[in-house]
Length: 167
Length: 258
Ligand SMILES: [Zn+2]
Image (cartoon, rainbow over all chains, first blue to last red):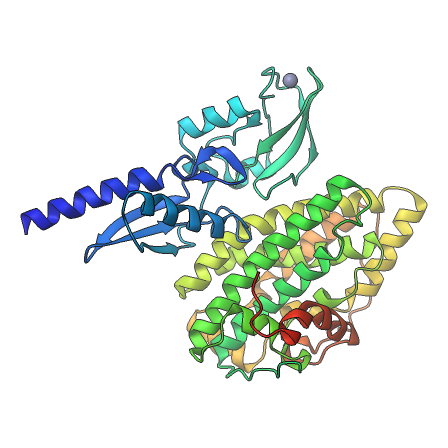
């Protein structure tokens, strides 16, 4: 029994390490662990079960992410994982790790403001330019090149930039 | 050669999920028709993004309808293999895109309702519907804000944009009553706490509409005669044309995949 429990724990850890390295195909600097899309990994009867959650209902990256997880696990010798998508609790940008926020900013995308949600959505927004740090910025469009981003412009350095919007 | 339509056993819960799924799919499809045609690039992306959200919501609802029905119908079969008379969406969402003002007014009238609706549905006693509601309400909040801003911009813009926005409001107003319509099937779910009574939302919806329409220097139509029929499958001719395009591939090549 103890040995079986140890094996499960090791398998779970190996599966997590592999799956956590899968990146978002639309923002390849972020892993699904950074994003909070990877929710849980369990081992049930020796089989790995991975739980993921979509950022947006229509996120076209989810199928791709599930496929990438399967490939990442297969490279570690873990065959036929069960990959389940859950909607609840609903994904929020608050789940993005600090590491994820830093990577986004370095990539040129303004990270979502923590503790956002509806307040940030309908209140005053102050988004700092990821290039020069100025907060003298304006929104160009609520909807950007992917579901999770809005298009902004910095009035100080004149650069347009993506903002990972609060959700 | 074309595949025959499926039959669906519409228990109250299956029917409910199909109705909401059809609303989202048909409106999402309408918005997707703008892709590559919107008045500016940013708006092209915005409309496509909203379409994606709505189609995503419809997929969850269809999957749930199929699971509850438990007769082997999945999201694809429910979307692609039901005939126009089997579609249960409100008439509002199938109305043609018209000019940009019509598309925006249609979106605004729907989103002002859906935003309230999904937020309240988060307290559904049905865990799947509550989870779908929690995702949908976040997305819908953006749709409402975006369409409201456009209503104000069009109404309070030039004489022509004001006239077109007012015309759209007059044309579409009669379809808003159906958003609040419930029948016996839905009433049974309301009684069980599975779904909310949309009537509860009417005063908040009216307040949102009045607020935005007045800010836009437009006028809320005075008429209160309302058109309905979509929920029971009586559609305008527009839906048949939409479905013939949406379903053509699966009807001609059953089970085709990418
Ligand atoms: Zn800047």
